[in-house]
Image 1 (tube, rainbow over the protein chains, first blue to last red):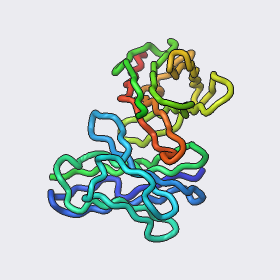
Image 2 (tube, each protein chain N blue to C red):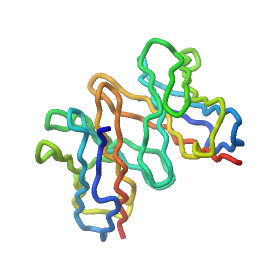
Image 3 (cartoon, one colour):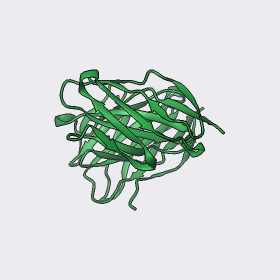
Length: 111
Length: 115
């Protein structure tokens, strides 16, 4: 069964460093998303992406964040200068007819 | 703006007992509703979804949910819980139109199953 994959599973970085989280969505899906879950809190929408552009972003998704689909398979989330409060689990998802499939997540720890 | 409330943060049931997890939503149009399950350290697995039609929907692992428009609810049920059902359960409402696919999640309900 096709699935969304994410790498790495765990990333540790120092405050102020740039990180890139990678995702491979399901191959025939056209809509892609990033969500985050701070420990103990609810899953929050960050951004949606369609036709090579952002279709919607939340207030969390400020200028420090960017997304890209550099080729036909990968979908990346970049955080330019990480802060302590960026520590969270980041989930990638892709969508087919309103069914959203999530990857296993990348746990980002900012020290 | 859409929102989801899961009133129960933590529920404990005995194995073999029935289960109902509550979910209330707020959304201006016909909602797209989902239940996801998350085991510790794992991603989110789709249990079931409601788009339209029959208000009682069946999902995987023996779960079902009933959409009640008059109560703005989408409660998840299982007639007999197994120890492997212990996990965190999230209700979510999905948007259409220009916000296609954007999910708003509830706070989650942690399910503990006693032997």
